[in-house]
Image 1 (cartoon, one colour):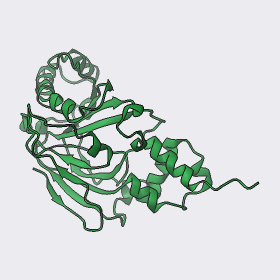
Image 2 (cartoon, one colour; image 1 turned 60 degrees about the vertical axis):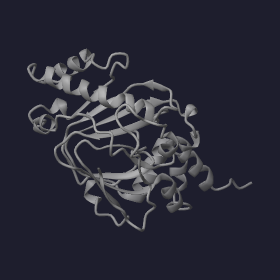
Image 3 (cartoon, one colour; image 1 turned 180 degrees about the horizontal axis):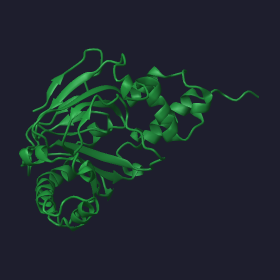
Image 4 (cartoon, helix red, strand yellow; image 1 turned 120 degrees about the vertical axis):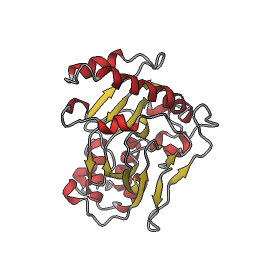
Length: 282
């Protein structure tokens, strides 16, 4: 169960979905997800070999630090593609079967619940990132794609480590739009949506990890081993203050098929642009 320390100077967007368990998801949580909530599932407890994940020496095997994978949704035990990727990244051959077995076990426990939690979405592509690198004092930020990504994503996190994953979260994208109203230079407003998003992000939260002591208010969340949560990380500013082993499930969604397409980051950026662009003088 996450331990939350809620800052009274921020909206409290945390929701606990206690009714969700493995094999029992009464409804979809897409509306709350699109509304920039952080939804935690304290009773969805996948079987995780925490000691195994925590003991992985990813400094010795750097190919494991951020391992992407697209699982076969028709056969969650099929790990052939993952095995090939690991071998291509110089993961020792004797470690690959154990990794594949543990990954498959988590898929089989979590992905059926994931698909029910996001039950109103039609997925274009399955995408998972095994985040096995130690992160400390990351800067506060809204996730920003490097290029103009046309996709929405449905993002779930699972803490695989023996230690808590410590997050700090702050303003939502809607809050950032209000904070920056009338303050962005015209050249930024004419940039592509992802560049405008990056500039909005940096103007509010700073440019790099050396600026993580900015003055923005924060909630603090300690996600315990095995905790599961979902959040649109392009809509809720966050920083990983400390974390070691986690997995994110990030299946792609066509923004036109969201419940509310205006909640896609591109649409939020375009709305901000339209509301802040100076009218042309005739």
